[in-house]
Image (cartoon, rainbow, N blue to C red; front, side, top):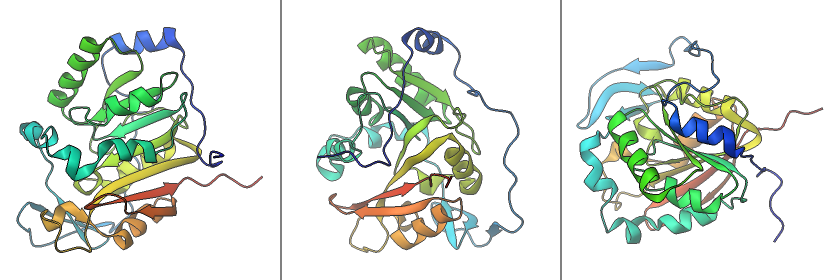
Length: 254
């Protein structure tokens, strides 16, 4: 089957990658300035259980799962609850693609993606050093050379501009403290035609046994992605409890 035109090819220079792997994680080819927050983009109100009291486009932002939630990320039942291998297959990656796993945690998806891009690169982005330390240990144990841990911030994933074919966020976006700023930077890091893939528990379904603030509706996700210039392409519901939502960075017209 012909690969959709909006999934591009990545690159990998082995020598440079070895340098990156031994260098401290931090800002990658990015000025230190943060994107400006439009006036009134966030509001503040009552704080729900597991919420922050900070609202974005009508949605209360959830509290971040800390590194003490490692057992939840690595629970054995996740294989049958979330079908991670199906998620990675649905990305339709090419061997040389450059992918960012944003909110990588313990690398649960990072290492699966790395198998699919042997000539490409995976940026494992997280804001918690404890999570990145786990990823580094696993990289060393497996002798991998196509994964780069990156220490992001609440407003910036610290990724090179126009470098990504795909940015994947699995049950992470709803916890972003500054979603507008973070998504603005992610869009900048995408190549024209690059994709953002959000995997989020279905907010429309009250039977999904997840706290409400840790779920998202398709309508809400579309509003928030369109606010930073992304175009909705498809929503696939092949997972038992989650949406697989695909958004594209438009290719400029000549």
